[in-house]
Amino acid sequence: MTPVPDTAVLGGRTVLFAMAAEAEYGPHLKARIEPFMTGVGPVEAAVSLAAALGSMKGAGRLPDLVVSLGSAGSRTLDHAATYQISSVSYRDMDASPLGFVRGVTPFLDLPAVVPLPHRIPGLPAASIATGASIVSGAGYDGIAADMVDMESFAVLRACQRFAVPMIGLRGISDGRSDLSTLQDWTRYLHVIDERLAADIDRLEATLDAGTLAL
Image (cartoon, one colour):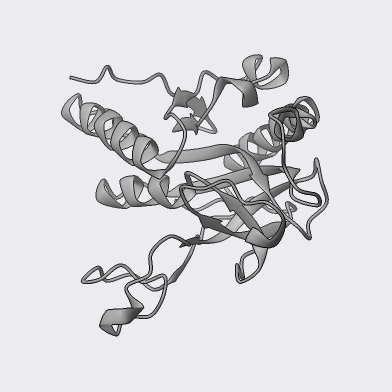
């Protein structure tokens, strides 16, 4: 059985922080949180987080909130800036040859774009599209979302399965130019680490003030 992950208590609420990769977990975040590491990509994120939440439910310790955080790509948003996720879509899903709207999972009662209703006041919001591929250059053509990543939709589905609300925070690591090396992704992660930590501080203040209804 998957061990029960550590949670933080912010404003009297238990919060599970979820991240994909150690490279995104820098010193500023380490001073504040101990995240559950899901692994990279939608399959790993869905399987690992669902198992973790299942263990937490079995122990009677489901969190009040899951916060998914890390990096994302964008061709239009400011690099190294952070954004909260306004809506999530699954860019890999395409059952349109069978008459389904592209992005809609067949026989699942969800729209192609799923809004995230819980927001931290004062943080800019942007939409995100999740898929199993790294997006670069012309790969952004045809993606309507502001950002791309590889885990957010999977995290959302795991949270929905256990009726736990989710907030997503992403820092823009790349997207303006083609990717060719790992450094193209990691170049701004130290800045994103600091800014995500500040966003967590703002989340804590919001929960302390009771202005975020869960």
